[in-house]
Length: 448
Image 1 (cartoon, one colour):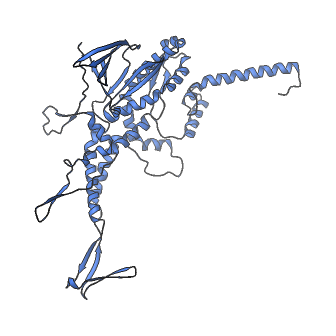
Image 2 (image 1 turned 180 degrees about the vertical axis):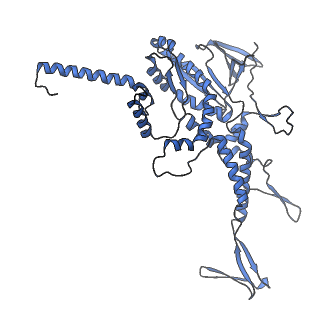
Image 3 (image 1 turned 90 degrees about the vertical axis):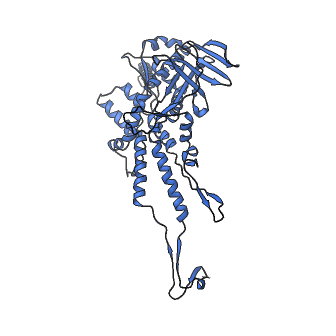
């Protein structure tokens, strides 16, 4: 199959249409749109052709521009931070799906942490949510597994090509007038010299393509509510401009003969002197209308509900019950649950590649990994204090609902090899008792 070397990626955003019988039409956009939306300084509100300044013409016909206030809000970046805290707030949950004990499991968990795979997971998911896609490239360096996150955040150029069944066929990574093309067995390096010419071909050493790629066809995480965010920024900008014009009080002066009005200062007091029938007072600026406030708050609520943004609306005098906590964060958990399913396949792919790296570095555990079924998954984080969680785990263990091993896995302060440590402590205690018993046989006066 001929290589395409295509680095251009487009997302299709549906256009408004009043004809229900017509086929959908789309605006085709690049990641630059999502990138600009993520950073407040790139928002449309700062584009004078979209939100106009005010031209002013004087008596002589000369035109000047009055620059209006523009207000942007970092809702997109804030939404990503909040969702990632709930989506990836817990470490990757790693278990063996078989019913047998797997001696490689605690070592594999330590390996996962030592290779900072959770950091790779965070960068990968953040890029996919914020910019529409992400790639995680694995490679070996000095016989150790390494990884590189490819993202438009880093100005990386990359793309995935699929076969007719939608399965990954080639992965392209562009850099320095070169292109690395990965398939199931090799990494081909091409260089642009009028046309793409093959420079080298080496085996990447993995069983399958060592690249995890995820693309969100819907665009960025906030794309569905981006028009609402644009409208809200227009409202805030108009409100800011109105406040700028009215932040000073208006003077109301009444007099039959304005030329007789005098302004005097006595100490710290300013005096306005008019005629006997005159009057002077200050008129305060108008306050925000109830209609404007209702529309603004409705827009904000729609955006927050769609993105799963929740802020506690009251401060509790004590610990909040778990049920109340669950209800409060339900909008967030609803969104997070859908994202867990969205990234489930990508996490499985990461886990399969990491297992290959583990086996190559620890060949003694090859059989345990091959015969086992070590799986990795995302577990949603819910705000909960450690004391409550520990108490719940202890109660479940006391009533024999869960095993000691499960309790060790779920406890917030336990190590990956907690069960191994407990066995060592038990063996050490037995050894100590044996030695103490031997001493009693030799000297009966040895204390208990």
